[in-house]
Length: 139
Image (cartoon, rainbow, N blue to C red; front, side, top):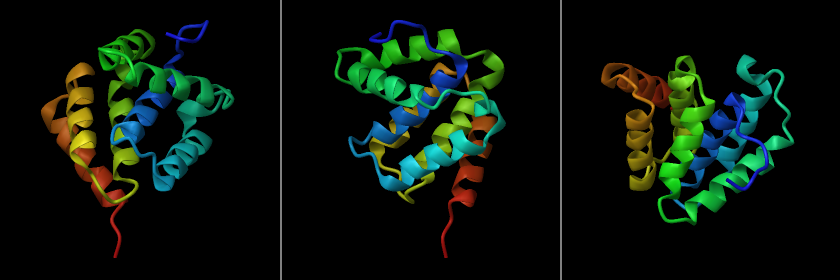
């Protein structure tokens, strides 16, 4: 990892959101706005130092350039994130993925990997995905 300090639980959540946004190699404005909105409004980020977002994002980008970087990212996330926040991470990832109204193959693969790596129950995962789709529906 490129940072001097280990990830906090909030950093791990940010890392998951950045990873899903960057998974298709295009970070869309809608995804960035969604990340910003969640960091600004969700209770889990109430005490979060938003200056860390750049550091965490750069860590994710650096890992994506390395062989087996995704495995390293999941190792960092699992180390930092208490199990009770695994579903929270998946909810945030689904919301970012759904924010632009398009789910590409890369995003779908990474969502599946997140479900697997964070041991998200299949039915809970389906419910989370359905809720994200409903929240981001347009007329």
